[in-house]
Image (tube, rainbow, N blue to C red; front, side, top):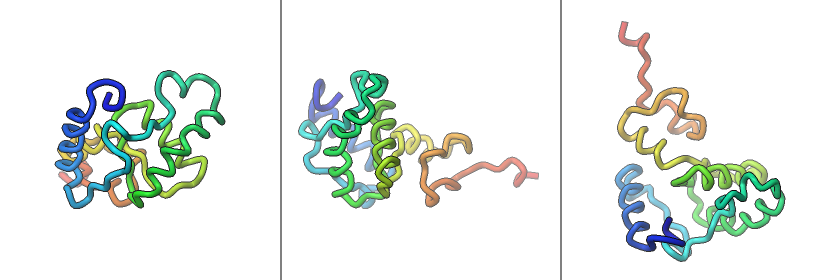
Length: 136
C-alpha cells in the first residue's frame, strides 16, 4: 500500500496510528522506511506459491532489517506480511513477536478477546482480559 501505491502520506498515517496505540516512546523505526522500506517477500501470492525456501531467502533482507531495530515486536498491517514475517522469525528463531496492527488496536481499546492473543508475547497476553468468573 505504501511502497507501490499511496506512498509516504499513507505511511505517515499508519505511523500516527501505531504511535498512538503503542506510545511514541515504544515506537522503533526501521531503516529504510516509508516508501523505501523493504518488502517482506510474502505478498502477491508468494505465500501460496509453493516456493517456500525461495520466499524465505527473499525475506532475509526484511528479517535483517527487523533484527537491526532490536524491537520486541514487529507490527504488520496485512495478513501476507504477518504470515511471512512470523514465518521468518520462527524458522530462524529470531526474538521478535509478529503482531497484526488490528490486534494492537483491539488490545488498546480493551476489546481483544482471550482467543485472539496467539501472537502476543508474555508481556501482553493478559493485558485487559475480561474474566467473567471474577465478576461473581
